[in-house]
Image 1 (cartoon, rainbow, N blue to C red):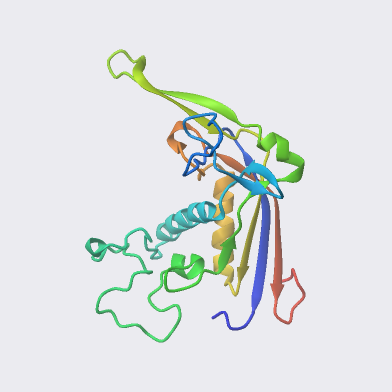
Image 2 (tube, rainbow, N blue to C red; image 1 turned 135 degrees about the horizontal axis):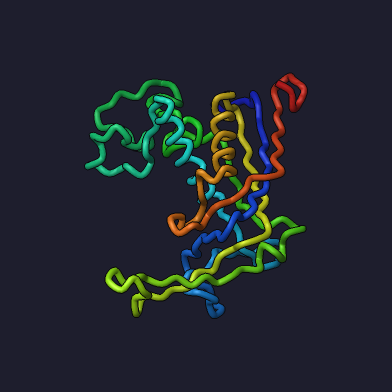
Length: 237
C-alpha cells in the first residue's frame, strides 16, 4: 500500500482560539505552576512555549470523522474498545484482531473506514498530524496565557461550594500553525478530513479539556492545500 507513491497532500492552516483553550499538561513542570491545571509546554528553537500535540489533534480529528462516517451509514470502530469484554460490540476496535476471524491477504482487510484513513495497530494511517506551535508573528500573544478560576456550586444555596476551588491556565489569543500531510489517499478520505476542519471552524468540534464549560473553540483560517499526483502537475486534479 505504501511501497510506491501515487499522490500526496499537505494541508496547512491556523487555529485561532475562539475563547479560552485548555490542553492540560500531563506532568507538572519544575517551575512553580501558575495554576492547578497548567497548559502543556515544550521547547521550540530553544524557547519555551505552549503547543498542541499532534497526537491530541489527530485524536480530535479522528473521533469526529468517526461520527460523520456513522451518520452517513458507514461503519467506524471505536479504537478505545479493545478489551475482551468489548469484543461483542459493533464498535470493537479494528486494531484488535477478532478471535477466530480469518484474515484475508489485503493490508486493509477487516479495517473500517476510519482505521483505513487514520490507521490502527495493524495498518498505517494515510495522514500525519504534526505538533502545532505558535506562529512566529503570533508567538508572544499565544504565550500570553490567562488563569481562569473555577468553583463548585452548592446545590442547595446555588452559591460557591467551600473547598471546591481550582485554577486553569488557558490560551485566549494568538494562533497555532497546523500541518497535516498524507500519502496515497483517496479523494473521499481527503474530503472527510476537510469536512472535519470545516466543523472545527463552525464550532461543532472543540479541542482540549473543559469543553462543557465553554472552552476549546477554535477558528480555522489561512487554509492551504497542496496536492501532488504521480505523473501529473502538482496542485491539479
